[in-house]
Length: 136
Image 1 (cartoon, rainbow, N blue to C red):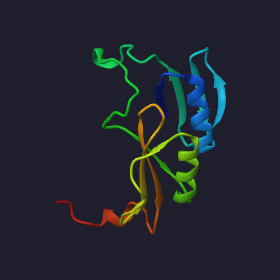
Image 2: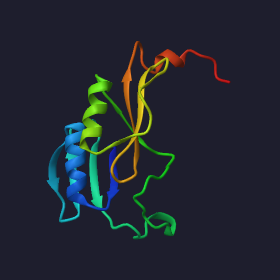
Image 3: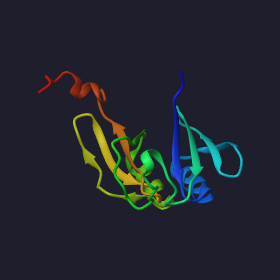
C-alpha cells in the first residue's frame, strides 16, 4: 500500500509556490494543467486545481475560506521555530503560538486555501511520552 495526500486548491501556481516555499517540497511532475505532484515528505502530495464553488464530495461545494475538517496534515519538523517562520513567510496563517505538550511543541496553522495543518517538533520520546498513560 501507499499513502497519497490530495489537496484541492483554487489556484495551482499559488499552491505550488506555497508548498515548495513553506516545506521545501519539489514538483516531481505535472499531470496535465490542473495537477502537480510534490515530493519531499514521506507521502507524495498532489495539489489539484478545483474552482471554489465546484462540487466536492456529498454535493458539498468547495470553499477556500478557513474551514474545519476532521482530517488534517501534521508536518513533523526538527526546528519548529524555523519551520513556523518559513511557513508564515510563504503565506500560512498561524492560528496559535507554539505550545508545549508532553510529546513536543505544536503550532496550528492554515494554508492560504483554508486547509488546517499542524507543525510538530517531537520532544523526548514523542507520542510515546503519552502512550504510557491510562486511557480515560
